[in-house]
Length: 342
Ligand SMILES: Nc1ncnc2c1ncn2[C@@H]1O[C@H](COP(=O)(O)OP(=O)(O)OP(=O)(O)O)[C@@H](O)[C@H]1O
Image 1 (cartoon, rainbow, N blue to C red):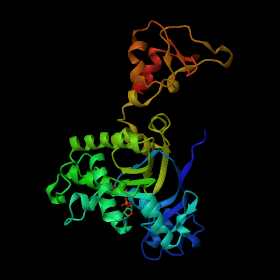
Image 2 (image 1 turned 135 degrees about the vertical axis):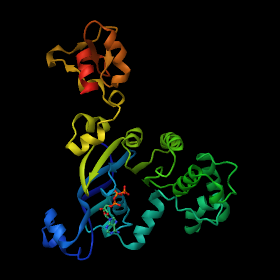
Image 3 (image 1 turned 180 degrees about the horizontal axis):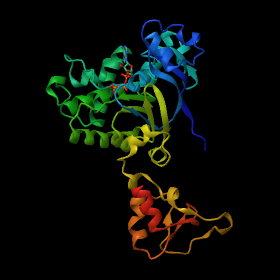
Image 4 (image 1 turned 90 degrees about the vertical axis):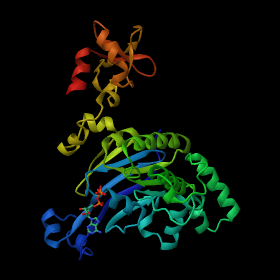
């Protein structure tokens, strides 16, 4: 089944600096680093193209200054891209009138940023209900909806507190609830957990995963932390100096990194939890594929952590089976050791 594309961004650019208008046309949309430097421009987003599929969590990561936030703001047009296309459900956002853009943002996009952006003189409930107030939803309806979300993010009992009376993690939950109240299709989160201490951060990540399993939104999530990217993302896009270095599953980045920059990001990744057996097995020849009879067969889609003990304890290579129970290859201790320690 082909995945449906929710957002498609094509040849997207954002230049910071005076004189950016006309610069790309002048350089046939292919300026060199020297052209950019001599014009005093920074390409925070440099000819970036990728798709976001409906229902996936796409994590955008990269070092500080690599262009993650600018890219995400371009996707919502909070920052005006210098060139390119952003198709949202097939509609080109860069051609949309400001009225229809506001409408799309209100009805389809939810956003959470690092500094929470809560209104200090409003209670938790009123902060969460605020987007519906702007949409002129009647008070009783918006408070009912806000109360439901208070429960969703586990803040019962704190409805009437003000933001200053909450911890950082609790404030972030208010921000998350508020971003969800419009029942958006796509949720943009820019380093939402980075201000939190490590324990709370982990807790918030777990809650986020469980929330997403119920909500099934399309999510674009920015982080500079590869562990967080791996825990949360279906796919990870790695940015470097405004360029998209590589996009793929964590396993793809690990097994076939596009360059040394990507390699560096993934070098401490938990290989046993990310690499699947099919990537390390010795595949069976087409004519040799048979039904499994071996009781100790391992699944092609199992991660190495799951099969390790059986492979280590077996005196010879174990057969690997696909979803239909056919033997598609075999995996030995040596294959396992190479994949884990390479
Ligand atoms: N308003 C601005 N004016 C000029 N340059 C800017 C501006 N905002 C960002 N930049 C530059 O654009 C580049 C990308 O910045 P951006 O904030 O998108 O990176 P980031 O990956 O999100 O970084 P961080 O993880 O530190 O938030 C950086 O070189 C930054 O200095």
